[in-house]
Amino acid sequence: MAITFDKPSVYQRIVALLRGYDGPLLLGALILSLIGLITMYSVGADHGTRFYGHARNLGVAAVVMFVVAQIPPQRLMALALPLYTVGLVLLLAVEFFGIERKGSQRWLDLGVVIQPSELMKVALPLMMAWWFQRREGQIRALDYVIAAALLLAPWFLIFLQPDLGTSLLVLASGLFVLFFAGLSWKLIIPPLLLGLVGVTVLIVMEDAWCAPGVDWVVLHEYQRIRVCTLLDPFQDPLGKGFHIIQGMIAIGSGGTWGKGYMQGTQTHLEFIPERTTDFIFAAFSEEFGLIGFVVLAAAYVFLIGRALTIALDGPTLFARLLAGAMALNIFVYVFVNMGMVSGILPVVGVPLPFVSYGGTAMVTIGFGLGVLLAVAKAKRLMQS
Image (tube, rainbow, N blue to C red):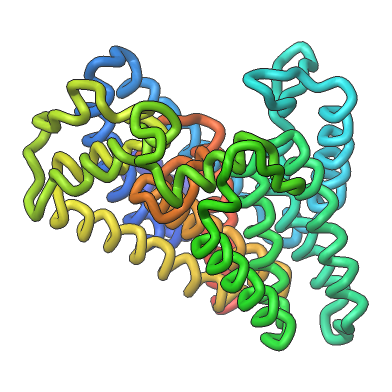
């Protein structure tokens, strides 16, 4: 007698495919994506294709996430050295052959115009996690020095382009790996205190430091202007300070409940610059108010909290370090974007994850979520 097998339905196949993934992490990403689409439909209404473009970017990021989620952490580890090497070579090529736009030399024309610094958001934490995995059980002070060199080389090349926003994100991703690898607080606290003292001196002596003609040496002129504009945006309210002032007005005018969906006057009368990209948080706050902010912040806390839980439970040191860096990268995106729009950080061009329009950043975030899903799946397979 012939044995027959029932062919699984499409539903059963989808359930089987999703069974290995971390449900809470996917739920957090889904909630934030829906918030992003709802917000973009309103603030991007005057831009025609921005809503559909944002939906496309989220779709591409989802594909990247699911593809990366199929790769076991040990396979990802094999990509670390090649990706880092290629990224570093491309950054060096930018210095000699890069395309300059708006005073910054960040792009290469290889038939297709690319921005190599974006690759380093992924390649650097991969490389540093790979390095500490190789040294597991025998990590010495010299290993942290080598890891710091791996971090500072690409950071310095990106800073020179100049690209303050991307260099900040790359620096943060590397510092997170160093922190999770067990770097002593004795080495962490002094630079933090030094930075705090520096910021205090800058605020107290603002008039002297921000006077016309003062050269800060380590910063480009436009970067100096951004910092001085942060300290007092009303010095040039219709010029350099316009972005920050309008962002703060929009956030404050939203009140507790907001002005209502698609009813934001600052947004739709085009007072908010870059309202679909860097300053979308101001537009969101105007329409949804404090209550909307609480919901959005809670969604980010849920996603990042779940991501850190996955990182802590990673099956290997490499998986824990990489997943931890990917989790806190999302935190840096959120903190820097909300901070610069609220007027507590300089404007550095960092998007709000899942909400701002932008393909490259969403692909990077999709890769990070894919890493987290892969680590969670590897842990489950080891337990089963």
